[in-house]
Length: 77
Image 1: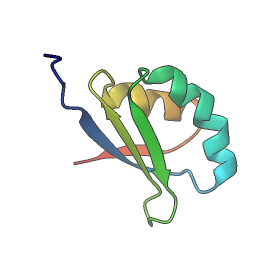
Image 2 (image 1 turned 30 degrees about the vertical axis):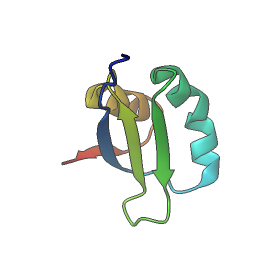
Image 3 (image 1 turned 60 degrees about the vertical axis):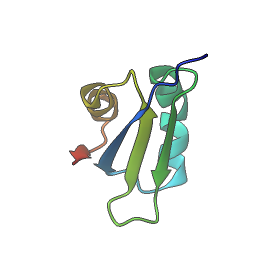
Image 4 (image 1 turned 90 degrees about the vertical axis):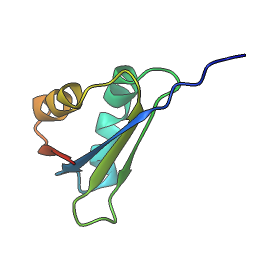
């Protein structure tokens, strides 16, 4: 029987305001996450939420990636 690992959901408040910014980050986030992990932005939310579902990614790696590219990012608990 195949064991299923529960994924951790990381939630971030960001300064990503439009789809152009999402498109810039798309290849970078895809490279950061594993094959079966997922990420998405909710630009309708007032905090421009980024959700990452993974069991391998750390909050620090997401914060570093967005910060390196000039975006504000804060983990929400």
